Image (cartoon, rainbow, N blue to C red; front, side, top):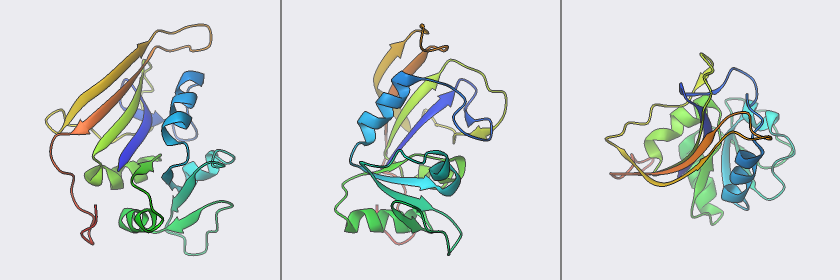
Length: 172
């Protein structure tokens, strides 16, 4: 399981609604990493990203038993998402937000793909803390601010140093 997110320098993914930055390079990075993949997305984030899922298999994490997404299917837990993705032939499940989905999935994750944005949001929706004793940065690409990016950013990939926690049903 991979968590993929853009995170501010002070650890937030949003101020409450939507992505707080316009970063075309990050958008392309996200699309390249997740193309044709199974995605786990919280309902609010899914609705904010309407139109993004033409080449994906979205699983919408929601407590609502009556919610019907325009594309993909509903799941009630990370464990259920892992089962559905595995049954569909997925070798990897990407968690794309929001904050509650990241927090629920972090114990099961074995990889993080983070865009570190050189911006301070001050408050909002936090990304779960990344404990340096549990994660090792294995790839890094730095980009300065430029004419189309108001903020410098860094793409970092982290691998978990130990096996991730198992889902409650014993699956990984």
